[in-house]
Image 1 (cartoon, helix red, strand yellow):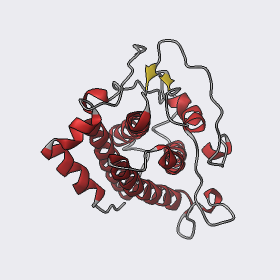
Image 2 (tube, rainbow, N blue to C red; image 1 turned 180 degrees about the horizontal axis):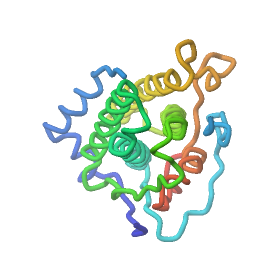
Image 3 (tube, rainbow, N blue to C red; image 1 turned 90 degrees about the horizontal axis):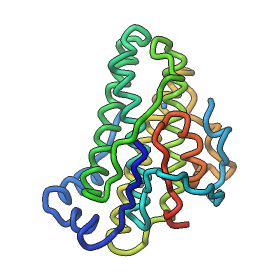
Image 4 (cartoon, rainbow, N blue to C red; image 1 turned 180 degrees about the vertical axis):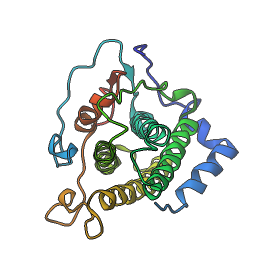
Length: 243
């Protein structure tokens, strides 16, 4: 999937979609909802929230767009990746996981699919197309491979939302998006803790991802997408995202 799409934010775009009663109702219902349900990754990406490295846009890549639309498409891309992964886990990993572990995976799948669909509905015609993913590096018959990949995605998701928050506008619907991002990042953190618990047992909570100030890591889109690139076939152009 290499067709270039370049969403733009305008009155007929995201703002219009968020004004549609059902979608807006869904948005705020989600934003008010709580969630239940977490070593490779962040060592390969920086741990600061100021990584401004930009690589040249790949030719023919899917363009995330600009402004708030671009940030939401960025989140939508990550949610597509996570939803696709847990869908594969639930479908393929029955022999690798215990019933309790599979129950956790089913919860995570439900949450990530909900995140994906929420962004898709909110973006409407500005949404990027479905991404092609590549999980050939994951052994779905091996518990360790599954859990380490899940740990990668969940902690990457937390760092991505933490990094993207400052890219949203701070007025109007931008504040709604920021609230939504805050609600989602807390869910992703719960996922990360649940996966950590499955890997290491009780007593750990991903402390390696918390800095000396007790804050979780934040990563900018360039670092996040670089870390996710091995699992996404579709090339993504994020050059128009706010800095």
